Length: 285
Image (cartoon, rainbow, N blue to C red; front, top):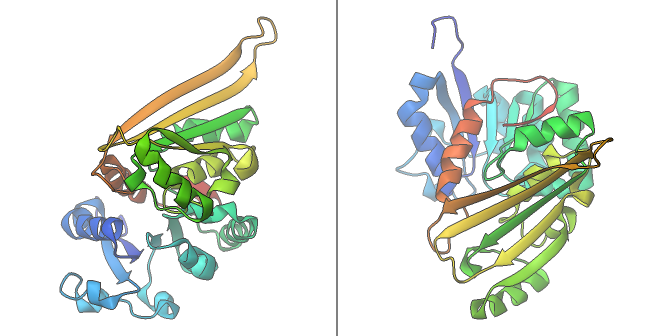
């Protein structure tokens, strides 16, 4: 960092496993990266006591402006994005750790507009979404024709709602496809597990949540892995008729029952380091 560069002030909304990791990283390496904590907020204040200096504990989200954050990071719950996303973007760049909330068209439209109006960037972390920037480039050019993301985890790693919660119980007997269809329909049923798919739908914006496909698979034979398979199709060659395709398979070590794989923490940290301001747009990082 040069003397002319501005220290970037970061506010963390949520102090669960990922929030704790980010706070620790900023406190340990922040000065070297030109970064410092502006505040930490958590619904349960008790969790911060003894771990976060009292001067950095924000008790009231309505007082965010006073903390002069350059970037606000949500790693709490989709409801925080619904309730406070516009306000966050009015004051700072906003890194959304729960992009499954954008399956609600009203929320996506509202925050895209807030970013444009404020000039701040709405950041979507790539997380376990491998190759996301290349896919976003294809979407920008209109050449992305189809995109499917398949996520396979041990049944204990899923936090599900509605019919999927009951269906998942049967998966302990063997591999079971819980869902295979548009990402928009899956996000409300597995909001904690499909942020990777939501990131894909935001990156592949010419297809969006209705046309990007998500497949959720429970497999008791992989207790310590999260597997993400991505299938991309682009345009066909006019002469040969051959179709542009890319397939990737990401195997991420994970603790049994963990929602987030080990490598995703470091990926999120890298995403935060990229939040330097990209204008009033949505940016995958």
